[in-house]
Length: 446
Image (cartoon, rainbow, N blue to C red; front, side):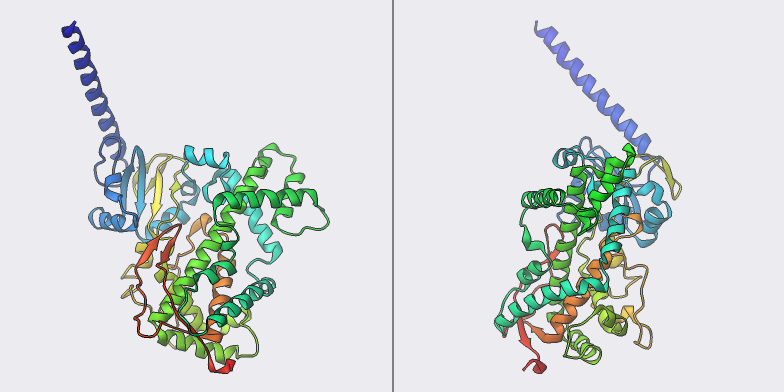
């Protein structure tokens, strides 16, 4: 009996060892087609090498060893990591037809009911949803001057709240958060309920001759569809997920970027003074700044762009998926390989941006300092077909909020305290740690 049991145990052990050997052999054969990278362990792959909440740091360290394009295995999933501007552009723009997919995670399908939305969708459904939403944005004037009135209303509320603090130390983040819409709903569950309620209200009051917003436009598109393939993206849960993604991505990133702007002003009062000088010269004091002023304010535009580069609140873009077998820089990349792009290495590349840790608006100015220079390496909003759909609106909000606040106030650290730490913290995005500042109304306000 004991001899029989021992034989069974030995057979199981030999079988497991054989399985491990076969799996490792197959992985090695598959990896030989991919860029070089660290050898994966059974089951976990290379997860132990990137076990850092600030994942861009180990990714950068591995790039120094394996180059700017290398492979990792996350669990059992092969990944390619891109760590420089040229590689990211080559993949996401030059070979966009292969590199624009999203990984298919079972947990995501369970949570979202199968809806991909803006962030996690791919294929023809995602492309249709994106085209439709961008069409709606253009129709409603998103990112254009027609939206200024609404943003100015939000700004007047912020100015009123900040004025009440009047030189007392306070944390400005909640005011920024409220103004950009984030505080309307504090959890994902509440946001879903809110969206479902709004969509139901729109369906009940829908008038095809009076299209009020993106939800109405979506209902028009859905009702006009006769092709079943095209109708797939117009399912109810797809709309909920798409608006959910737009709402969270837009408000969370904008409020946190503005918070970084305020922190940078405490560290760089000379930049704040130069922006205020330009505001006084171009806008004056009798009205709020307008988007029509931006073209005449090159230093302000340069300062905003440079602060975005430094803040880099989304250092790793959401993972892409290779949609079919392809060749990238001579390597054979199989379908369903995941692709990670490390924007932190691009926006902090010392060859592109000498002394990258310093705030230098002059990087985006012409030699005579009279013109703003747009640089293609500035990819804070991403690149390729998945570039941020709300980029125009985000740039509008950042410009109007920043210039309006500096038009009326000067921001300083509380008396007797040094400027707060620039060390970031991780959350939904790469955000500044909570800090307090003082806001002093400028002389012209009295």
